[in-house]
Picture 1 (cartoon, helix red, strand yellow):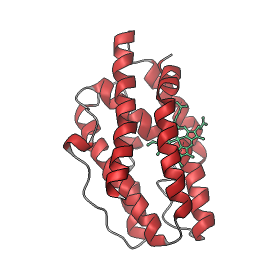
Picture 2 (cartoon, rainbow, N blue to C red):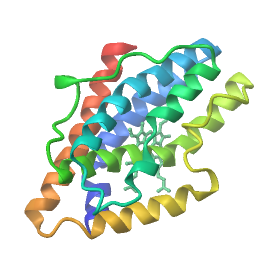
Picture 3 (cartoon, rainbow, N blue to C red):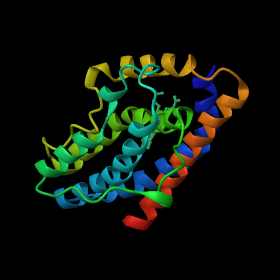
Length: 186
Ligand code: HEM
């Protein structure tokens, strides 16, 4: 199934990103530093979602608009007293020109809700904060269910190995470009 292949074939890039992020997260000591981290997510996910909205076929993914994260991140940044920055464009983003590429990028965005649980726990412990967690909270108790529904939708879309390869390549690019964005902006 495509969801299994995505997991397997993006594992290395997830690990690289997770490692880079965990180091940064552990070093966060102030609300300002946490807000800066959110700004990194905002810039990249915001750029991704703009492209995704332009090419996604919502007939194939009817709950797609419910899954956008940019607004939640902006709300968190505001709650912490900051301002949302510009979003990524052009070469800072993976190529998202067709529905299948949008799916690959969405796989990465949706998957971030799974690690988000761990991240929000870390931040709450380190900062003693109670606001500014709507993004990392994901879908709360519904996170696993939303993930399962997304994977089921994914598994209905690619019709052959060539199409699967397009989704997987887009997901890997989305991870890699996030790492580059992260290094460039922090
Ligand atoms: C400190 C940072 C992170 C940690 C500790 C972390 C941890 C995790 C964990 C524990 C899972 C597996 C959850 C499960 O199978 O129930 C997971 C899955 C996933 N994470 Fe992360 N993550 C982090 C950052 C990210 C980020 C920033 C992204 C995307 C930008 C991301 C994308 C994904 C994806 C796509 C999956 C799904 C893998 C699959 O297909 O099962 N993660 N992460």
